[in-house]
Image 1 (cartoon, rainbow, N blue to C red):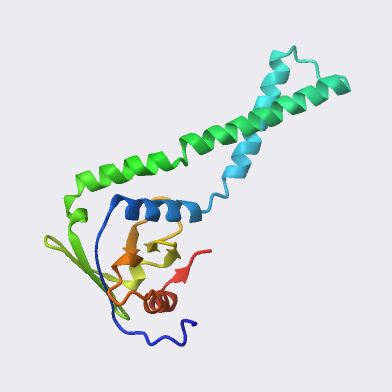
Image 2: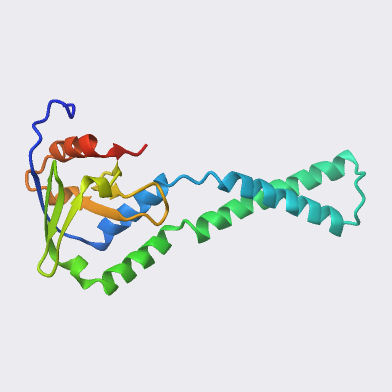
Length: 189
């Protein structure tokens, strides 16, 4: 069923955020963040490593085919290890789990039951200690995962993220919420 065929009205959600919900939101947002600077940085690092290797090896630029092949292998292994280290240290899921735990511990209201209403005017979130309203202009993009809809303020890394777990849908069918999001936000690839 396409989003044009769905009758769109207010969508009600009732849920209590869990660490896994926020983790899903962080991972979905991070996965969609564009990093156009990463490739030039890695190429620059490889070139600096190559130059340092040549300088430390005696500074002679003439080399045999065997030396060139060995140097190419060392550079490729270095780049591979660098990418692996980058993946393990910077983009690791354990780091997100740690951030989510800190966020939940520092904001106990996140663990309160939340009632959310999503309609053409925006979003309204209510809990025992908070009530918030957000216009659609605050959330320009969204990502749909298997577990939730992740609303994003922008494509930037530190952007505001709002997680709406699918398990919280009162009607149980995510098509109406998807249709609203398609109307008011842009779905990220």
